[in-house]
Amino acid sequence: MLDMDLIFYLTLALFILLFGTLDNNIDYDFWARLIVGKNFFQTGTLFDFDFQSWGSTHKFIDHEWGSSLIFYLIQNHFGDIGIYFFKSIIIFLTIFTITKIIRLENKKASFHFLFFFFALQAITYNIFSTIRCQTFSFLFFAIYLYILKKASCEKNYKILWCIPILNIIWTNLHGGFVVGIIITLIYAIGEYLNKKEYKPYIITFALTLLTSLINPYGLEYISFIISALSLNRTYITEWQSLFFSKYYQHILFKYELFFIISIATFIIVFLKNVKQKNLIKHFREIDKTKYLIIIFALLISLKSIRFHVFFVYTVIAFCYNDFYNIFNKKLPINIDNAKEIILFILILISTTSHIIDYKFINIVKPSEYPIFCTEFIKINNLKGNVFTSFHTGSYVSYKLYPNNQIFMDGRYEEVYDIDLINQMAKVFLAKDYNNFFEKNHTDILIIDNSYPIYEKLKKDSNWFLAYEDKNFSVFLPIQKKNNIFILPEKDLNYYNKTKFETSINWL
Image 1 (cartoon, rainbow, N blue to C red):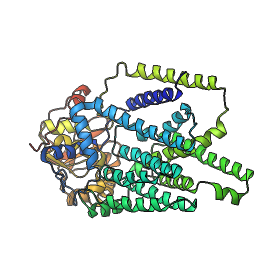
Image 2 (tube, rainbow, N blue to C red; image 1 turned 135 degrees about the vertical axis):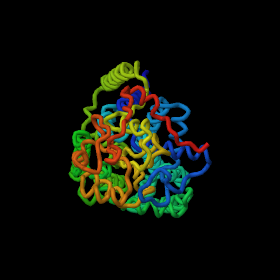
Image 3 (cartoon, one colour; image 1 turned 60 degrees about the vertical axis):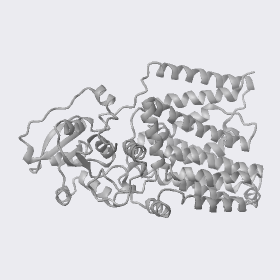
Image 4 (cartoon, helix red, strand yellow; image 1 turned 90 degrees about the horizontal axis):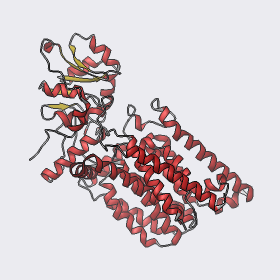
């Protein structure tokens, strides 16, 4: 007899491998993570200052330092293929943990892959891009939910001791550990409302708060996290609200559809239960903890695109059975199994045909990175302060330091003054940029051609267009206009082969 759980998990693994290879771009902040990791393994220390930037900075409190060490080790020893498979393993373990949560509520639950397929499709832009530090937060979020629910279902509260211990790891990997602390507190409140044992959750919450202090920065780290939560991120797309973001609406459509279907399902289930019982009786019987967690995940997903994953994972974990009670047609077991086997075969064929000639190479795309402009600056030995967008800053610094420093990069909350990113945004929008360059000595500009400042600079008497490609341009002070410049290599293979080469070294 076929093990349908095995079929499901194999299908899931193939699906993750397939979609994990469809996006071979490198995250903008990955370069900064490699720099931190390299520094630690070469010097045995963490920088408490920023050596890469000429912008206004403060003490460097790195809430992702642990992730940096892991990323550097994987890239340094296993290269691109190591990054791919590590990302796939983390995603698989996350979904595997979520299936275990489903089984806590319904031990006989059978896993239908189509549901997971559509749910994960809603957040492909968040989980299948090049590995990011928040990938660890998604995994720990699932693990916390499993431990909290298992303690409640089995009344085995000793397992809750795992959370304060795991929190030490999560705290040093990513600032998302705050979500874990909040859901622990929500569980305590929910169990109190459910009139169940809640004191172990209160104790766990208190201990988890205490273990958050076990980090290289101590209490200062917690103060930083609190201040980071209130930062103004108006110009950062992933921190914008789902229904108010002006960008990537075509990508967000699948999530919006999932969101609407989920809300509709909640309403249907609620009305159905109220019809069977009266409202007061239903309220007494429902699992308050479950709905408090769902409401929390829903609210943070409305606040930021970055938090969509938490909502989708919560819905899968706590509402999978509700969905199937409504939509499942209860097909005969043989037909139901055949459907899952067909899905497995189709995904197996798709994955195999896709990766059979796949090179497992992460690519620095010229549409995303100023690779030609950076090379132009490097081969012409142009030294000085470089002004480039915050999301490309880490790459430019990684490739050009020590000859050049950047104004700022994606570590906006970790090392830079709060208002710096808003100043940068105004420059790219061509709002009083001359005044900015006068106050902040700037030698070289790398400008995205899509921004308003590009056209303004072409007419500016203080700057001249020294080099441009399809997406980015280099502007230099007018005094260098008569210089003769070497043009950069145009072969993309060269840039992908040398992408991790850097002059940053402490040995």
